[in-house]
Image (cartoon, rainbow, N blue to C red; front, top):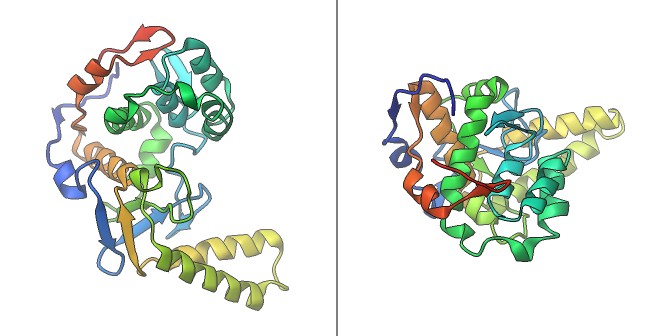
Length: 254
């Protein structure tokens, strides 16, 4: 499935970053948290293009070129081949979720929550193996940094499954943005102002408590550690085999 010299399966990473599916409370003033939301977010000079929605990281899996990890992940939610073809035909992961999954949400596998965390871990790892730019992006983030997807204003049912909410941080960043607009709004172009808002807001990271499972953050940190170690994530392949995930009519073997 891949030609990378992965030697061992890492068993320590879930202990380091928290078990997948476990609720977390991360006090921002006590941890070096870098949170991400928009793909344009910049922290310490690094664009936080880490979400499944981020474009520019195509990879190959089972002989198919995937434009985004989101599209592969979403295909695991369905067994209908026609729906899967619609998902992969979209130009972005956002479009696949917004227009195709939304249209067929009643046809999502009822048992999907029972394996979605391991499936996401597997999918993100395939992106790591298959795209050098994404590997470089993950490895550019300091190892001690805690990655958190910030989902405070998200209203979807999985907002605290994949990410965490921190209303205090969001409120403070909003106040900062209002001050910056008053001070610089008339002196900067719209592009310059947006860049300044982006950079300055992401400097504010030590306020409030992040609450949620943060599974996408954990998965990214697990993959980062495994890339550094030359090991493989502790993917529950037996669970995925039992799930009978099919892509375009073919059952995947893990």
